[in-house]
Length: 211
Image 1 (cartoon, rainbow, N blue to C red):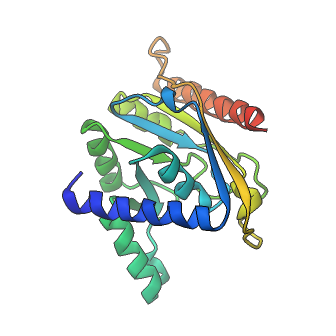
Image 2 (image 1 turned 180 degrees about the vertical axis):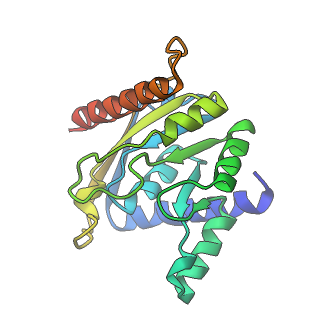
């Protein structure tokens, strides 16, 4: 991580932490000890714009993957996009990761960073966990990185996809057990599918625990 990226990221998370406190959002983190010191993929459910903010404030330095906002062709989106890039966010076009973005992700992991990914690819409409693709499992395989599922609860109730934001509430991050590819499964497709299913199971169990 270069100097300016660290400065911008710390400014951003500091501002977000102050904003959450001002809006009376209580952030509770369980199981943070499950996050390894080296590289790791943080896989979280996604139901709100508040999710990446909560992860950044609650878990520290993460590299996020976000959609490219430049396609909106307006000044505010372009400025926000530039700020995200300065903070080290890797952008993708749409819901699928392009080759150059994948290379950036693998490079971040190779250097010992933690990359946060939302396997659903978009915010849930009803707050429930949606469809998962095997993208996280593919990255785990290519980088030989552990996956740490993190269940987010409370963000949908505060800031749903289609609804007004609330100015008080509790957000819980439940850091689940880290997972690894089962290398005893010889078929690559089945191996990735197995890890994807275990990630989803951990997230669902974490949500039950949070409630």
